[in-house]
Image 1 (cartoon, helix red, strand yellow):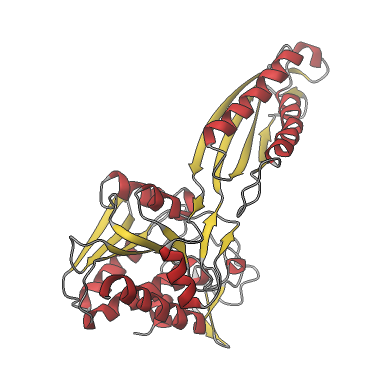
Image 2 (cartoon, rainbow, N blue to C red):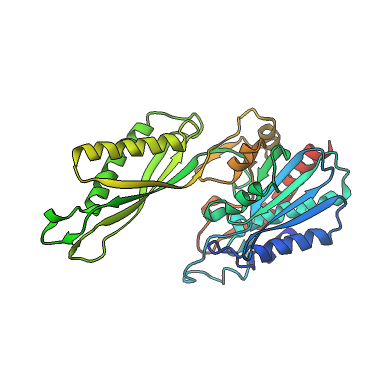
Length: 377
């Protein structure tokens, strides 16, 4: 099978997260790799929840750390089918493009990695390859976190890591981290005709949201040379039970995209300071702050050997990305990692998502060459 045929097979499997259902896709990859009869190939289907699984394949000498190639097999939900020219899980090729949910983000990249691994049948590997197909990347990296928890991926498992997220085949060496907070404001209900008898949780949430602008300005004072400033925003608000009731509860989600110098603990301390200031100004002001997700920034140095090697292969300088990936989790395991894959992030999560087939073939060639340079020479 060629790379677009494998990508089409992966796209046809409905792995929307939530709920996930990635096990069928992981099992397909397992069976495909086993059918290739690659020498010294160990394949593990790692189930971590009902109908949910990751895949880990180790090829070549197990005692010699080499190259980690990784990609996720879940996709964002399709939602309404309105606007799609063809069914999102019935892949179509038109005018040199492969259409379907996950074509760019990122089953096309996974297919190119699989084809590169298939080519190792004809190579004498001096260092090992680790291929990781993760579940749940779109909902908090729960598949990779489970792999790390269960020690299926360990510290120093590879010298270098490459994630095939869509970058238009440009090397991405850095991106911001991200932290989400759920903040619940606790008030007291009353009849809307007597607001003085209650504590309006929505009004207190509004006061807090206004103060976030001051925090955003403060964060802008510190800039990372690659990534710019940390940014913070309120993105969801929920509150109230009835039009004539003073709301006793209101909840907001606060999204912070962090540069390396701003830890999640630092951002939490700033949110707590806002809370303390408002409590001093308004007697009845109670809230609870809960961190619901956090991922560190990626910051592989410009002069790192992996960055230089990948830049040489694509004949273009590396850059940074506005989105987050699983790369920092590999980084925490001592595996320097970059992002490099077919497709554009502008196609991620959109109607009529596609990847150019010529990019799939070029990605396959790039991954093959990375394998040769890291694991053969």
